[in-house]
Image 1 (cartoon, rainbow, N blue to C red):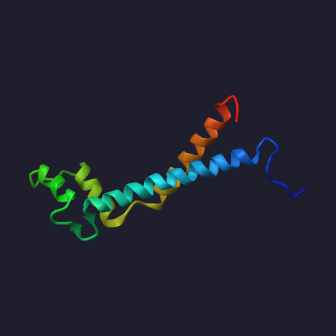
Image 2 (tube, rainbow, N blue to C red):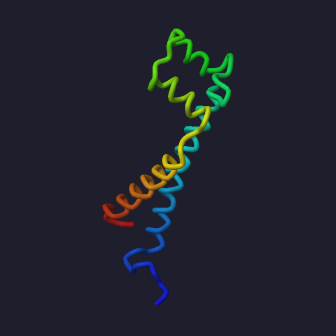
Image 3 (cartoon, one colour):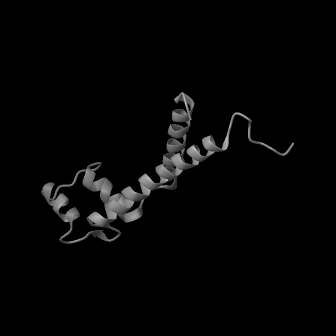
Length: 105
């Protein structure tokens, strides 16, 4: 009566979905951490960092939408919550799709 999990949904499937969601979350979190480690920071690009080297490749003219501009934006304010949620959902869907299409579990 109180069991809301369908019989076709076993714990192994649920574990795969949760693991997929966590992997998606981890990928985005790692990307944000890497951007920060490169030197893209809240107050701008850190002097002497890899980010400074990347910016120097642009010759002082960083265009809107370029890698440098996007990385600086991520370094300054992070990514929206919707990106984390989207990555979690994508990871869960990939895990579920892989579970549905695999012949054996």
